[in-house]
Length: 21
Image 1 (tube, rainbow, N blue to C red):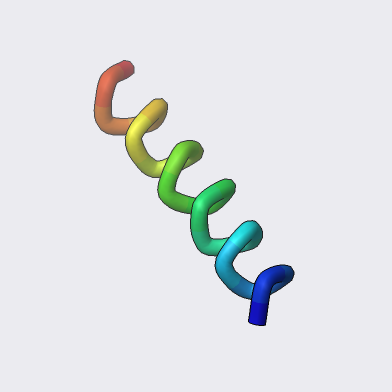
Image 2: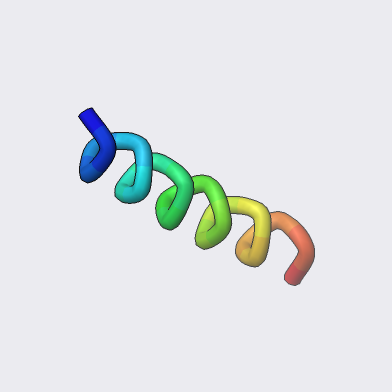
């Protein structure tokens, strides 16, 4: 539940960072 969401958020942040690069 909460942990899954946190993991998804972290993955999304990494993806966004990669795209920004």
